[in-house]
Length: 123
Image 1 (cartoon, rainbow, N blue to C red):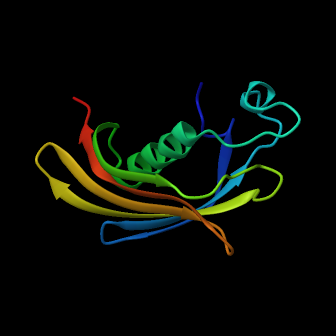
Image 2 (cartoon, rainbow, N blue to C red):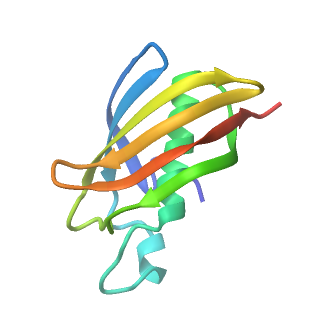
């Protein structure tokens, strides 16, 4: 499943110097919620990482894949009803074959994910 424009949309982007802030809108009508706790849908943590990967691709202009995760803390449960708008902050450092990535996914009240890892460039 392609996440961008199906599971979420990018409402705004602020980029510069290996950093980016993405304002994301969750799509509550996405099919993923039909099978992920119907009646009380929650955002799957793997989709948080998928959104991050998409945003790193936007920042770099290169297709990337997750090659290692040093830390990924899912600190709160996100739902499309309770937090339809999220902010993803990404910081990149060039590394051998890709980028070291530090990111956080949050809204005004909570942090939903804290991430540190490496994404490698697909050849």
